[in-house]
Length: 74
Image (cartoon, rainbow, N blue to C red; front, side, top):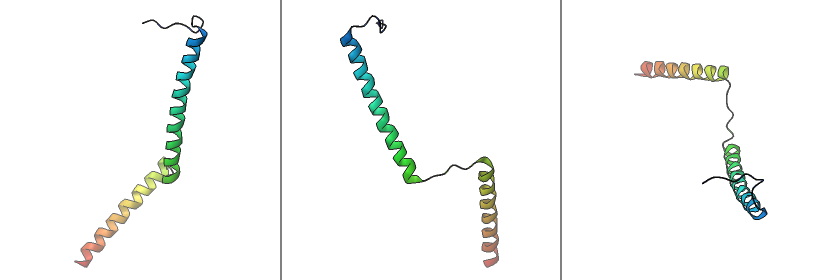
């Protein structure tokens, strides 16, 4: 099926297309609102690469120290 260009459409066809697009826009706006609510509730802040590396190194060091404590307590 070929699609008419907007210059070939009747007024009612144009209005139908506008209604369809309005529905799509409303659905997308609802999804955006849902995603924003999720972002607000999680309050997650993405880390930059340097901060992520530092955090990873700190976690590894903490695990190593915990393992040392566990072996000393045995």
